[in-house]
Length: 244
Image (cartoon, rainbow, N blue to C red; front, top):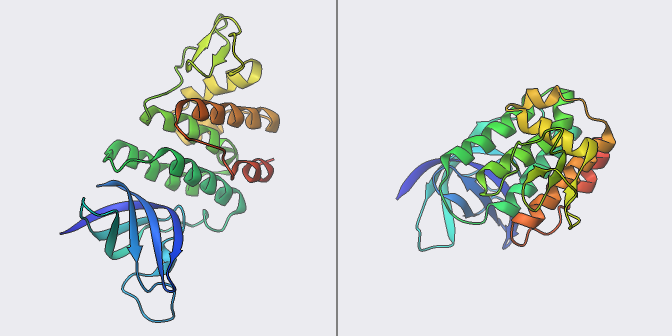
């Protein structure tokens, strides 16, 4: 049976001599792997290979069989054609970071329309963002993505509770016995980003490069603590250098 679904491409790998396998987070079926034949040749193909770039937003007609690990795509086209994400070095670095993060946290083929809409909107707003918003975008995205993952940081920062306990996911009064916490400007910056409900609001938060890096490190530690087998973010060092 053929279904219409939107999707965001997370990764592609070569398969055989002429084909690819694309990992796509779909609106209808959650995370899925698709086998696309014949896109690595000069011959005409029903589905264009250049569509399957990481972070691409697609409209697709797909065949879906819950008993199979590999699905197939009948037709695909751009849902949103980026003006900057694929070509602007800063926005591309942010998009690569976002895409790697999604690969690490989206592991089950579960439908979640709210999560899909959040992700799609995040990529589109990144494409349209100004420079100051782009600088804070990785932290904004990583922080608000947690709201869909079952573990989130509570927005309870005050002068009495200024320390961010990354294990507990909340701000506390005294330094915890463990090492997984942030304080000072880093904790305050996280609280400000929690209050930013839209990317442009995050862009209004003034952070220096050191604080911005420390916020990203703290958020990645939060993911390590709360997402099984999270590992390390290979795109993070590049992102830090590009946005410095």
